[in-house]
Image (cartoon, rainbow, N blue to C red):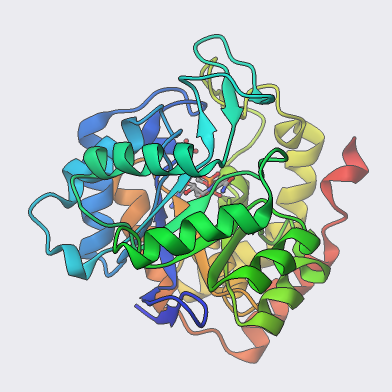
Length: 329
Ligand SMILES: NC(=O)c1ccc[n+]([C@@H]2O[C@H](COP(=O)([O-])OP(=O)(O)OC[C@H]3O[C@@H](n4cnc5c(N)ncnc54)[C@H](OP(=O)(O)O)[C@@H]3O)[C@@H](O)[C@H]2O)c1
């Protein structure tokens, strides 16, 4: 497993991370706690040491499952990343998401971040977080104040580094000017390359780690999802235009040469896609979700895969041939 630093301010971590959103169940059609614990442990056994979760994933359940999975493991061998800033227990001026079970509100005040951190530490069964990230921007709190809280938590030994998610370039530059920002986390995959011209160049300029979320486009880049796939009613992919039959067909067409290469190399399509993603300028790590041990172990393989120039060129051509989701809107 290859390792890279989480930006100039962060620590070394495996290039493939275990993304723990789906194992929280919420928006992913529920979860199987036993299979989820096994998924995390199998990922660690396969050389992954970076785990990315968030307080809001499953409303605490993802953090609890991760806590159970790492219980008994050497804490210093794990790079634990979680997130704050989305609350389902209070109301704030900024509604993030109205749901049947819980409505979610954004806030990044000092008091709220500190309270959330304590809850996350309890659920994860640890006394520090390696990478603490703001989940979404809070328009009510100045970036300077947010960074000041995060820097204080670092001084107090409760977190080792901090980063942001879902930020625009202006706010990212502002955060980097106020403190020692380790990482930026944004959606990025072979099918979602908007950040090529936005945050990725900035992350290179300021030596900030870039963590790709949804790097296999929530399963689309496995090449295994077709119109016959049925999602349960509370799976975010049901009714999602990205999973409509004409889009699925277009993705299959774009992925055909990558699938052929995968067959030749005796690897999977998503392993090739992840390995290619890790070669993109500025990308430092991929955060891949997995529901079970088989997926987790397979995804970890991408972290040690070397691709030659011809192989990279096949995948690059597929990426360049993708017309973008907007074409199907
Ligand atoms: N900061 C943010 O706002 C934000 C937003 C989104 C995600 N994230 C982070 O990024 C992580 C990954 O993103 P994501 O979960 O949205 O999408 P993803 O990693 O692109 O896709 C994960 C899904 O793909 C399927 N899959 C994974 N490995 C597979 C394999 N080897 N074979 C077949 N299917 C496989 C699984 O779904 P099925 O088996 O159900 O098909 C899995 O839940 C999250 O867990 C989270 O840590 C952060």
